[in-house]
Amino acid sequence: MATKILGVDVLLKIGGTAIGSQKDASLSISAKEIDVSDKTTGGWDTFLVGNRSWEMNCDCIALYDDVVQDDLINKAIAGNTVEVVFHHGANITYTGTAVISSVELTGPKDDVSTASFTLKGASALVRA
Image (cartoon, rainbow, N blue to C red; front, top):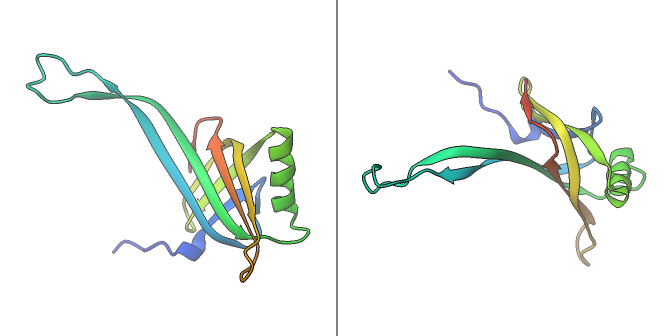
């Protein structure tokens, strides 16, 4: 029987260290479609796979003095890339280099402050 992966076992790490106080992490892989439909495809659209891309997102509780959160914000301001590891359970990892495409810091009146990060692939994504 297949083993289920618990959400608590999904972590996003930068430089080998988990982003502090994660509430949510996700990985999205997509591909552009190249339309190769013609008069011989029987009225059906036919596609080839074009360039692929990936994106990782993470929502956290904002923390004072969290080295990884602070580093991501500083690297976003500087326009630097980061090495990312997405742990999908105990045995599956995805790694690559990413640009920090967005950082969002929030401070709702009746809730804890949050930090959200969007990292877009700047290299091939490798599964191990």
